[in-house]
Image (cartoon, rainbow, N blue to C red):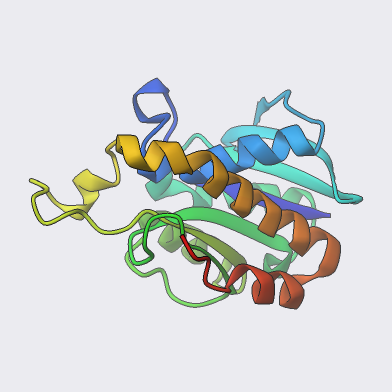
Length: 191
């Protein structure tokens, strides 16, 4: 079994924001896993299913992104999983919009959701980073303001395929293992 966690903020106000791309990918994976009936558990919205023949638990913390560790830690403990059996999907300012990259371990790069999870369970879990890019030069506000904005119209055209690529990466990880999934996912995609 693997635990797949998408990071985001709960509620309709944040539903389509850049910070919630992790939720969007988990929702897509739930459809693929045949399990769209989420229920409240582990301080989040939770379901189980089968992805590429592998049992999986899907979780979207409802703790707000900065407290994600309070949701992830009890879920990991409940299923008696090691951190290496956890995949966390999150937005990444330091990747261009639509880039998708996978890695295991590392720092939090200023992402408070990742920081919370690292504080709760350690750093050795798989991260699927979905690029949202940096704010444009004319953006009025901080990067923290930017991640809470909706995708712009040009990005929304491409967003569905980005979510599919991210979901494909997790499915490949489940089916073929980390190294194969990282090699395939981390190749540059020409746009």
